[in-house]
Length: 213
Image (cartoon, rainbow, N blue to C red; front, side):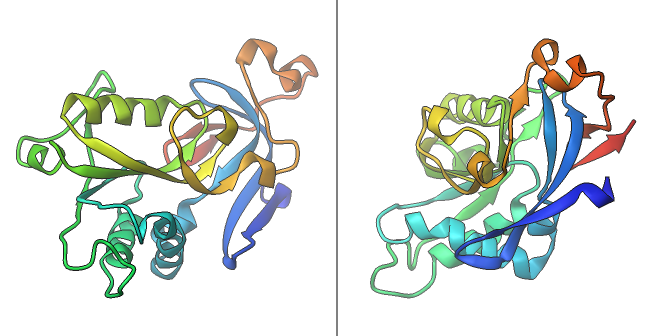
């Protein structure tokens, strides 16, 4: 798989890049011809700061934010994003405020919950949801359902990658989309053309990585 990797740089900041592996991959919901590696953007401090600066831009001037809810190990980016939203400046609406970084817990049934001591940071608070990848919509859907239950007010959704931006009901800002990856598609397992062509699976995509088959 290493020989099938290529990088897609962000036009506004080429230091930020999406690493893409070509092949035949599966998740619990779909098959794909590409695996997207975003870990370096979430774990490298310098890159995470650059990512946060880009993701904060749409909310700097006119969006009051109390809490950033981080999904899929985006806490480092979330902290830098809060720092960016709180910077001094006449056009920075959140200057002088407090912004909290919160991550929900996942139950054995994969339902999202917030601990009792963090629920006050959600109820009636203005919230940005920060997520790594939006593909099937399962993760973001669960997050929005959870926040609605706890009384949160979603004022923004930010993602590193959004597979189908034109199909999202909620307005979302993302660094990369499927349009940046030639031939990017997701398939239901029964409709996968790679399976029909007899191409064996290369790997199973799991949380924050993959397992070779």
